[in-house]
Amino acid sequence: MISVTEKAKERIQLLKQEEGRTPNHNIRVSVKGGGCSGLMYDLDFDENIQPSDQVFEDKGVKILVDKKSLLYLLGTTLDFSDGLNGKGFQFINPNASRTCGCGESFAV
Image 1 (cartoon, rainbow, N blue to C red):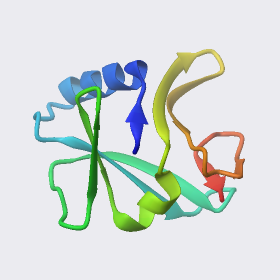
Image 2: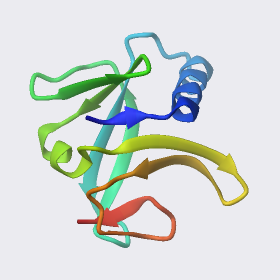
Image 3: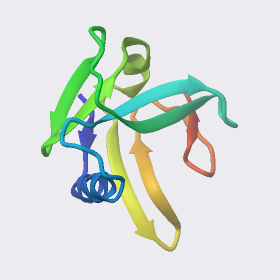
Protein backbone atom coordinates (compact mmCIF):
# COMPACT_ATOMS: atom_id res chain seq x y z
CA MET A 1 0.00 0.00 0.00
CA ILE A 2 1.02 3.58 -0.61
CA SER A 3 -0.62 6.22 1.56
CA VAL A 4 -0.88 10.00 1.68
CA THR A 5 -0.93 12.34 4.64
CA GLU A 6 -3.66 14.92 5.08
CA LYS A 7 -1.21 17.70 4.06
CA ALA A 8 -0.28 15.84 0.86
CA LYS A 9 -3.95 15.30 0.03
CA GLU A 10 -4.72 19.01 0.47
CA ARG A 11 -1.75 20.01 -1.70
CA ILE A 12 -2.71 17.53 -4.44
CA GLN A 13 -6.26 18.92 -4.50
CA LEU A 14 -4.92 22.49 -4.68
CA LEU A 15 -2.55 21.62 -7.54
CA LYS A 16 -5.37 19.92 -9.44
CA GLN A 17 -7.42 23.13 -9.22
CA GLU A 18 -4.51 25.42 -10.09
CA GLU A 19 -3.53 23.32 -13.12
CA GLY A 20 -7.12 22.79 -14.31
CA ARG A 21 -6.95 19.02 -13.87
CA THR A 22 -10.12 16.95 -13.94
CA PRO A 23 -11.25 14.45 -11.29
CA ASN A 24 -9.99 11.75 -13.72
CA HIS A 25 -6.40 12.86 -13.10
CA ASN A 26 -4.71 10.60 -10.57
CA ILE A 27 -1.27 10.75 -9.00
CA ARG A 28 1.37 8.57 -10.66
CA VAL A 29 4.35 7.69 -8.49
CA SER A 30 7.33 5.95 -10.05
CA VAL A 31 10.99 5.25 -9.47
CA LYS A 32 13.68 5.98 -12.04
CA GLY A 33 17.43 5.55 -12.08
CA GLY A 34 19.45 8.66 -11.24
CA GLY A 35 20.10 11.16 -8.49
CA CYS A 36 22.94 11.17 -6.01
CA SER A 37 21.78 7.96 -4.29
CA GLY A 38 21.00 5.93 -7.43
CA LEU A 39 17.20 6.03 -7.61
CA MET A 40 14.82 8.99 -7.94
CA TYR A 41 11.13 9.47 -7.23
CA ASP A 42 8.90 10.77 -10.00
CA LEU A 43 5.49 12.28 -9.22
CA ASP A 44 2.99 13.49 -11.81
CA PHE A 45 -0.68 13.65 -12.73
CA ASP A 46 -1.98 10.93 -15.06
CA GLU A 47 -5.48 10.17 -16.25
CA ASN A 48 -4.54 6.90 -17.97
CA ILE A 49 -4.52 3.75 -15.90
CA GLN A 50 -2.38 1.08 -17.57
CA PRO A 51 -3.40 -2.60 -17.33
CA SER A 52 -0.21 -3.40 -15.40
CA ASP A 53 -0.65 -0.54 -12.89
CA GLN A 54 -1.33 -1.13 -9.24
CA VAL A 55 -3.96 1.35 -8.03
CA PHE A 56 -4.10 2.45 -4.40
CA GLU A 57 -6.60 4.86 -2.88
CA ASP A 58 -6.08 6.72 0.37
CA LYS A 59 -8.08 9.68 1.67
CA GLY A 60 -9.83 9.92 -1.71
CA VAL A 61 -6.54 10.19 -3.66
CA LYS A 62 -5.91 7.53 -6.31
CA ILE A 63 -2.26 6.59 -6.67
CA LEU A 64 -1.00 4.74 -9.75
CA VAL A 65 2.22 2.72 -9.60
CA ASP A 66 3.82 0.62 -12.34
CA LYS A 67 4.92 -2.92 -11.42
CA LYS A 68 8.65 -2.18 -11.50
CA SER A 69 8.34 0.83 -9.17
CA LEU A 70 6.02 -1.00 -6.78
CA LEU A 71 8.90 -3.11 -5.44
CA TYR A 72 10.64 0.06 -4.24
CA LEU A 73 7.53 1.89 -3.01
CA LEU A 74 5.51 -0.59 -0.95
CA GLY A 75 4.73 0.91 2.43
CA THR A 76 5.67 4.44 1.36
CA THR A 77 3.79 7.48 2.65
CA LEU A 78 3.58 10.63 0.52
CA ASP A 79 3.78 13.77 2.64
CA PHE A 80 3.96 17.50 1.94
CA SER A 81 6.00 20.02 3.87
CA ASP A 82 5.87 23.78 3.54
CA GLY A 83 8.14 24.57 6.48
CA LEU A 84 11.43 26.40 6.71
CA ASN A 85 13.48 23.20 6.35
CA GLY A 86 12.12 22.37 2.93
CA LYS A 87 9.08 22.72 0.78
CA GLY A 88 7.50 20.10 -1.39
CA PHE A 89 6.40 16.51 -1.51
CA GLN A 90 8.39 14.07 0.58
CA PHE A 91 8.50 10.29 0.42
CA ILE A 92 8.65 8.40 3.70
CA ASN A 93 9.93 5.11 2.34
CA PRO A 94 10.67 2.21 4.73
CA ASN A 95 12.52 0.41 1.90
CA ALA A 96 15.17 3.12 1.49
CA SER A 97 18.48 2.28 3.13
CA ARG A 98 19.94 5.67 2.27
CA THR A 99 18.55 9.01 1.07
CA CYS A 100 20.28 12.11 -0.20
CA GLY A 101 20.15 15.52 1.45
CA CYS A 102 17.54 16.86 -0.95
CA GLY A 103 15.20 13.91 -0.28
CA GLU A 104 14.61 13.30 -3.98
CA SER A 105 16.80 10.24 -4.41
CA PHE A 106 17.39 7.08 -2.43
CA ALA A 107 19.05 3.66 -2.41
CA VAL A 108 17.81 0.27 -1.29
